[in-house]
Image (cartoon, rainbow, N blue to C red; front, side, top):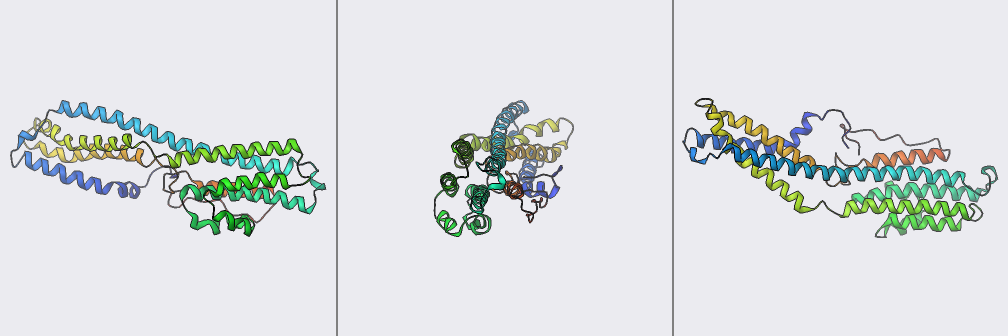
Length: 311
C-alpha cells in the first residue's frame, strides 16, 4: 500500500510513459493528416465526442467505485483479523480456569502454543492469498512444532487446517479452560474462519470481466475519436491552431486512461503490489502484539515503507 502523501513522479511515469508515447504518435499523425495533407474529411462533430466522453466517465467511475469497494472490504477483513488475534490471545492468557500464578509449566506451554499457532495462522493466510508457499519455512514454520509444520505444508488449505488444529488443542488443554471458556474461544475460531472465508472470496472471485473489459474498450474508443473531434474546433481559432490538438488530446487521453488504470490496480488487493493491502506489515504487527502479551521482550521491529510502499 502506497503510504506517502504524494505519489512520486517516477511512479506516475512508470505507469504512463508507454501510453503517453502511443497518444503522442497517434495524435501527431492525425494532426499531419488534417493539416499538411488536407484530409479534413476525417473530422467528426465535437458534440458526438463530448457525449461519448461523458458516458465513458460515468462508466469508468462506476468501475472504480466497485474496485475500491473490493479493496476496502479486504482491508476491513484484515482489520478484523488483527482485532480477533488480539482478542484470542487475551482470552487464552487471561480467561483460564486456574489463576495465572497457579498454572503448571505444561499449561503455560499450552498457552504459548495456542498464541504462536495464531501467529502462524495469520502468516499462513497471507502466503495462501499471495500464492507464496516457498516462504513457509521463513514465515510460518518458526511458530509451529516441526512435525505439525511438515504436515501442514502438504495440505491444500493450511490456514483452515491450522484453525482445526487450534480447536483440537483447546480440547487437549486439560484443566486450562472450563466449558464456558472453551466455548468462548471456539466462537473466536468460528469468527476467524469467517474472516478467512471473506478474504478467499475476494481472492478467488475476479472482478467481473464484462465490466473491466468494457471499461478498457470504451476508454480507448474515446481516446481514438478525441483528436478527430477537436481538430476542427482548434482550427476555428485560426489557421495552424490544429497543432494544439496534439498536447491537449494527449493530456485528456492520459487523464482518462489513468482513471481507468486506478480502478484496474484496485481490483485484486492480495497480489503483493504497491497498492494492495499491506498484509506483511499487518502480520508483523500481530506478531509483535501477541508476543508482547506473552511477556517476550526480544521482538521484531515493525515493518517500514520501502520507497513509500508498505507491503
